[in-house]
Image (cartoon, rainbow, N blue to C red; front, side):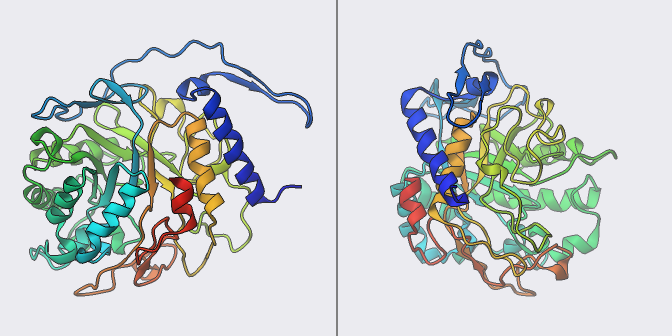
Length: 419
């Protein structure tokens, strides 16, 4: 009998061979697979017609550069200069890595095959003290984006304002948490968010795609659930997008995370998905059941392991109809917590994107691709903890994530495997 690790490696090899024989795309998800007892053939019926390609419903931002290059999305894939584009994106949090190390680490990511660097802009890292914005040193967002551009790397910003990222209050400063309700259309909160987004826009003036810069996308909020009350759910996501565009954050792509039961207003944004090798956020002290991240899927999309495959509430068709299968959190490793401490192997990491491609995904966004360390706070430590009403405690400093490139720049076996 194969061990769990062996089964994951087997899936990896099996699908690699399959990908060499014929392209696998969203068409695969429309076709039928019949299985039979061990030792007998498995037949794949690939006769279902390809779904018609159409425009997405979301009203996205400026998609043409001054040099004529274009970037957009249709109902099945991203389109770069008129051709289908399957990018590889890797998460690197600039404020969790010393500024003097950025260039070397960006080049490592480029050597690994990454084309797009995604990064959280963590509000509490920049305005822990109200009205005292810090964009210096490891917090110098503009300098980081300019370095990415220098080496031909595109940039995807995940600006929150709630980002999670195992940060204190999900990245919202303590003073904002105390002043008004957050993560809803409260006038006081939206005014503070507008000021924060405005600062981000000023830092990145001239660096957006339509201006000839590297910034191609904005992710709003994170893991944000549907709401029944006015000013929550889809309404709040639309408000955040409006505020972002008013602040000059005009990009070809706007996304939100598409976990089960999340708010996805398809007239405003595209959903992105993820899947992790393990679930350290799980509240059980026992061994977890087999991980859905290693299942090929035809009825839904990956969920970040926060649901059950086939559950109607987990990425049912109405939540992503007419959108490409984009990912932003394909686990490049796994964060340790004080409650659960999984040990992740290169096979654990390499099998997940292989299965996602086989299930129709047409972008790969790894989280994390490069680990880091939390900066020092002025008023508090900046990590997620039960003190701030989060379910688990994570290390005060280390955000290594067992990533392909670790917090000190060390290359793990998974780095070569993913390349």
